[in-house]
Length: 148
Image (tube, rainbow, N blue to C red; front, side, top):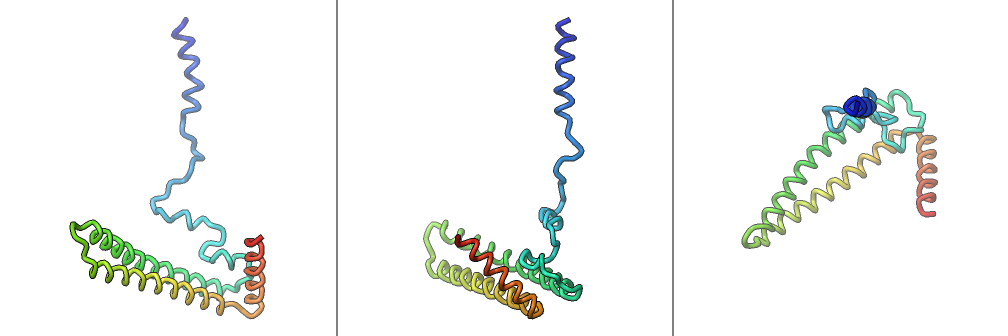
């Protein structure tokens, strides 16, 4: 009787322990979740704009180029960080090498900032005058909301 009671009490536990079919999707590509975002390849600040098909295609091409450029510069940046770590963990500190690596790191950061500014400039100039005005108002409203 006791064994039967234990067996019957474990049946609900087994049902609860079963993995559901509706669980989180596992994607092979670690950045695949970006494809599920609302708006797809369009930056968040342009999602509620009424872009033409031509503008959407241009934005998509610009985003793909920016992604490839960022990927390349990111690998260079991490190689530089690794080299800085190696220099700082050496038995003796080679200050000339460290200074050169830090200068390279600062130059990379400057180039990344310049590339970001160029990208946003190109994106803004892709819009019509009416769309530019709408975006400017939207950003001003967002900035005002953030400061209050």
